[in-house]
Length: 424
Image 1 (cartoon, rainbow, N blue to C red):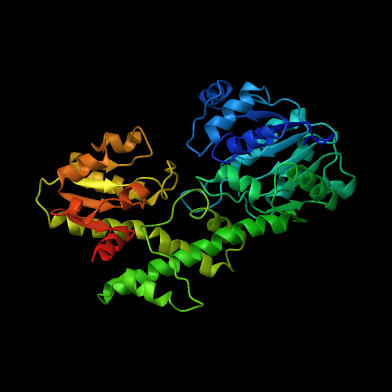
Image 2: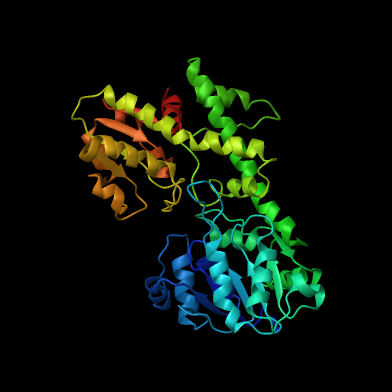
């Protein structure tokens, strides 16, 4: 349902969050303009196609583009709502890089008008929304901002982080609760009114700083729990204990739920967001920092374990790495530990490496340049040699023990062991 004060929406950044959000909002009857500085992305969307893999997104984009409700541009145009969903990576020194957020604010500043609503969705350290409001005030002194005049501001500024799971983005954009933080109460109310037009979950109002903190706290919680599982697996290895059996038995306790260990943590949320919390309070975020160090260290540890297996085999045996994505059943390689592991192994073993990743069509250029070759599951199993499981894709769970007979294997996710236990 359209609201009279919000008829046109500009989504800045058409990536894994921005494009699904833009398409969903357009499906509710808004005129949506997607802004992206990549001309290939713009032309792809304007042709009714998508440049990312996400369940049901291609059909929705085709529908809203075809109906004229969604179009993509390379330069800002006037709108009523500006939703910023650009990447916020970390530097090599593990510091937040919110340069693209500032660039987005600078780009929309010239077209802002009285009554507009600016919403930041990108993960940001505490205080970023206020900084964006102040930047907009400097760029447009003719318009008052809430950091300067509070409730009477000409432009409303709010923060509303996404809570979505790749592979279920469209469903979760609608069903998940949202935390909406305004710089003023009026900013929060206006942002809440906007989100309730396409979100069925509860939209909770709070301050911008609280909303920024909540986003970082959620992923810091998840990262810390993963770090516990990974640290416990290291202790199990030292004492010759079967990690998967031990975790399964511990979880029989009614109030214990230890997560499954793995080769590391990837993606643009859990592997990144805790560093924003650390940057916000470096003297206080000790557990959060330690969890990040533990999880980052899993890549090197997994590489060492893989090398141990490889060196037990023939010197010319083929090596198949199963999975490159940062989690199961998606094509997203951002911050992927599996990609880092495969790359390091390829540096050592070159053209012996075969990559099995059913969710991509071509290998990343850096990996291909090292001699790796993309193959399929059946071919990798037929070649035998050494099989290294790095991602628990559903396709890999269906590989029976007899299909791996005769090959040396290393399973970083415990799914092949579970298959063998079921057979036994």
